[in-house]
Amino acid sequence: MIPRKTIEELINKHSSLEKDLSSGNVEKNIFAEKSKEYSDLNEIIENAKKYISFEKDKTELKKILEDQKVDKELIKMAENELNDLKLQHEENEKKLKLFLLPKDEADKKNAIIEIRAGTGGLEASLFAADLFKMYEKVSHKKKWNVELISISRSEAGGLKEVIASIKGQNIYSTLKYESGVHRVQRVPDTETQGRVHTSAATVAVLPEAEEVDLKINDSDLRIDVFRAGGPGGQSVNTTDSAVRITHIPSGLSVSQQDEKSQHKNKAKGMKILRSRLYDLERSRIDQERSKDRKSKIGTGDRSERIRTYNFPQGRVTDHRINFTLHKLEEFLEGEVFDEMIESLTLQAQEEKLSNLN
Image (cartoon, rainbow, N blue to C red; front, side):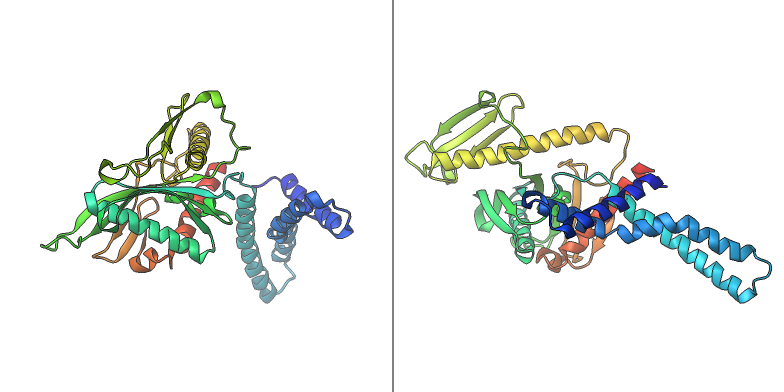
C-alpha cells in the first residue's frame, strides 16, 4: 500500500506545474525541465486520483450491497462494479509504484558497447561480428548513431574485438541488459560432417560517462606511447601514435591505436577508461544496495551466460527469464529485438517492485 500523503504530493505537484507552465512566467533555462516533469506526471495523474478515491468509492458500493431495500439487479451491478474497482485499484497501485521507483541516472545516457570473441576460435569471432551487425541494425531502426572506437578483425570477416559508442535517446536503458556471455549453436561453414558447434562472445554495455560524472586526477594516470602494430606484428605507423592509459588506483588499462594521431587515440582511450571507471563505481554501489536482494537480471556479471542463439532450432533464448523467441533470423536483423528487451525490462521492474514489498 502506498501512503496517501505520497500520492497527494504527486497530485499537488502536477497541479502546481500546470499553473506555472500555463502562466508563461517560467524562466527559459528551467522550462524544458519543468515541461518534462509535467509530461511524466501526466502519464499517471489519473491513476493517482483514482487511487485516492478508491476507499470512498468502495464504501459507497458496500452501502448499496448492505442495503436490504435494494433490488437484486442493482446488487448484482454493484458487486460487478466493486470487483472491477478492486482490479483497477491493483493496476493503479502497480503503475504508481513503478513511477515511484528510484530512477537510474544512467538510463538516459549514451552507451559504450564492447564485444569480444570468446571460446570457439574462428567461429566465435564470426559470431562476435554477427552480434555487432545486429546492434548496428537495431541502432539504424531506432535512428541511433554508432561511432566506431576500435576494432580488431580476424580472418573470414570475423571480429576479435570491437568497441563502439552509441548515441541517441535512452540508449543505456535499452541495451543495459545485453551485458554477459552470448552463446551460439550452429554448423560452421567449414564443418564437413554437419556437426553443431558451440562458441561464445561476451558483450559489455557501459553508460558513457562524461567528465562531470567522474573526476579523474591526472596524477592517477600513467600514459605510455608506442608504435602501432598491424597483423603479424607489422608496423602500421612510423610514429609513436598508439597510447596505453593506466588508471593506477584501480589497475584498469586501455590501449588505443586505431587513429594515426596520438591525440585522437588518447581522447578515445580516455572515453573508454572513464566509462569503465564509472561503471565500476556504479557496480560497487549497486552491490552494497542489493546485498539482501535476489535478482535474475541486471547483475552486471559479464561471465554469466545470458542468451543462446540456436540456429538448427531457429530460436533465441534468454536464460535469465526463460524467454524464447522462435524468430532467430528476425532477431539478428533487429526486427523483434524489442520483444526481448520489453520482457527483460518488465522482469526487472517486477523484481524491483517485489523488493519494495
